[in-house]
Image (cartoon, rainbow, N blue to C red; front, side, top):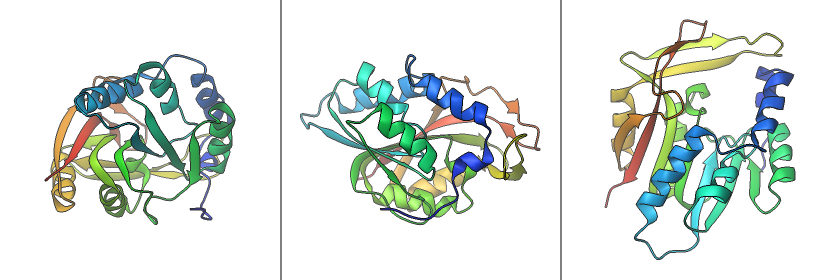
Length: 219
């Protein structure tokens, strides 16, 4: 589905885009490794092939590096992002995969077995709707990497060299549990491999503490 949305790169600078492109020629990112390990474990006993997967906020498609190097099963991959700039890069690097423009807070993606999302939910104002759309389209489980803490926080960050600011949310553990339960999923929160869930101050009143949330469909 194609939509007119504000390109995320307007909130970033040229160095960020270059970094995203550089990562595609290296080893899988730590968070991708963690997600693939969990996917391998949870699909090990299944005879299903391929397993469908939606990558929400896929950026330049770095999750494909992990699929290529570590996945134990064939993955029917579909990437979604609000940035046409990132999607063009992704299509060039991973021509065998599918990518589409989508605002997850406004539209629901295709039905899938698994959904993954990293570093995206905390930048969505209508985050409850985003979770709803992901859960409604996911049959088995969701892996979500985002900012969690004991209080709900929100601030805008204006990155030097960017055209526009972007929102940053910190969610509470209770909020994520409630949203998962509301949408028919149980939730397990675990440490983030990339940051060891160590807090890092962002300079805009928000302290980034990343966790990985595993939402499993009930029944």
